[in-house]
Length: 120
Image 1 (cartoon, rainbow, N blue to C red):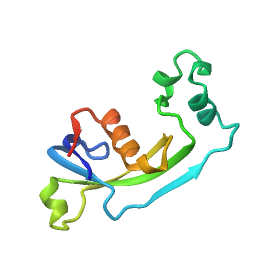
Image 2: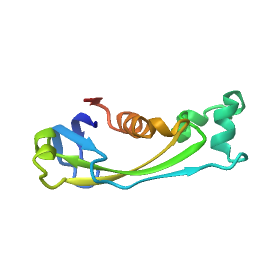
Image 3: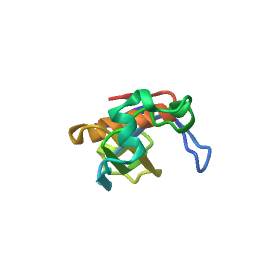
Image 4: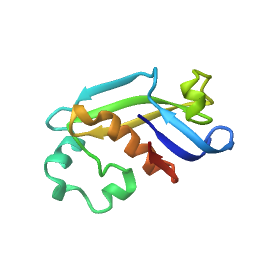
C-alpha cells in the first residue's frame, strides 16, 4: 500500500514523475488524545471549530488519535519492490478517528500536501 504520482522533493526540488511513497520499514507512532484536547473535541463536535480552522491548520481530519509516521519516497514502485534505497524520508503528522485506518489517514494527508499523488 502506498501512493504514487508526480512528486517534487521539498528538500532538493527534484521532480520525480512516478514517485512511490510508502510506510515500508518505517516508524509509525499512535497516541490517544486526552478528552480535552482540541483535536479530539473538534472531532466529537465539529460545529465548535472556529471559522477557518480547517483551512488554516489542515486539521479537518481531527480525531481521537494523533499519528506520527515516516514515509519513504522512492523514484518509482519498482525501486521499492527491488529494495533500492529511498530518495527521501518524510515525517507525516495527522489525526485519525480509527486505529484501523491510520495508514489511510497518512496517505490521505500526503495526497492533501502533494498534489498529483493517488492511491495505488
